[in-house]
Length: 430
Ligand code: CMC
Image (cartoon, rainbow, N blue to C red; front, top):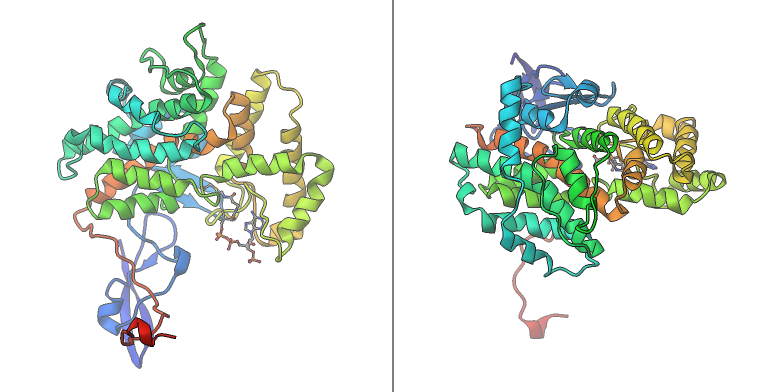
């Protein structure tokens, strides 16, 4: 890292700060001594100009529409690799050799079952509970079952916890689905690959054989790759902040799941499909586009816009292709929601409002249609996102815990509340 100098003139004095350069992307001004030097904080709600950490895992160029995992473009990983290879890459920093891959796959596969007693947990939830509510609870509860991998100072325990979460998340997600639809849980099958096993656990029933369609399993796997990491997004930052206090990894990932649930983040895939259903027909698109542009209407086009991408989200392009492949394989020739999505995309991309604000489709725009065609109900969409993002959360958590300069995350504030005042006894209050 080269150091140049940035100067800030404030309170009558001039202060110098190091400028740090990354491998690619914007440089940062290191203001960590600002408070000590000037008695002032920086103010950046929503972190629009703040790098919260140093990381070697994922890089996004929002203007170019580029996403790299450990330097590899997402398009190449999605076309040529598989999800567990991406997991290895995110966790260890390089693509695995053949023996490394085999070893990793077998280590993950070894952990696919969950403690039998955990299955009783599910019956404590209402059947109509949102599966994300169930995920928050059950994943948080992993720390009650796997005490032997909660010591974060032990590298072996950290790795076992990481493998356990990557391996068990599909099992827990499938159980949340089965519980919701009132079907018996299906145990993992270690002879199937990661995505095929997940589809099997979701859609097999004990009374008949279920053969996993390899084209659909490949599509599922690709969807997992696309969602695996996305640098310092809201849920990942939540995981890092939770982990900075020394909380155990299962608790940190449960915190990430809770954050992901919001409609501005992982909940957008569900919201996007609901929006397409609400639009209902191509002729109603202009009405909804007008609403999205109306400052007095809180409505937004779900699946459009992104804090970082000011160009087409590269994941959205792959997702669109995957969507067509899945519909083709299933012989779905006319999907009215796909027609609406494609027309809406065309109209929005030519509308000055969306052009000026650089609002492009994001990954969630086409993922809902694809996941629905695969057989998932809308309330499972964010669960699938959580399943895939788990490896990203873990890689980022491990990177943070293994950084010797790591400290508890503790933002400051601009206080605008009441100044100091004296307590008033209740009889004297008015
Ligand atoms: N429809 C209409 N207008 C929009 C939209 C949209 N989807 N997104 C942003 N805008 C407008 C917004 O009103 C604002 O206008 P103005 O400058 O006149 O006030 C401007 O664009 C900038 O928006 P912002 O809310 O300041 O941008 P942000 O970076 O804080 O928010 C976002 C990013 C993703 C939350 C937002 O674009 C959004 O709410 N999109 C819909 C939800 C969605 O699809 N989320 C999935 C994100 S991708 C998956 C993930 O990362 O989880």
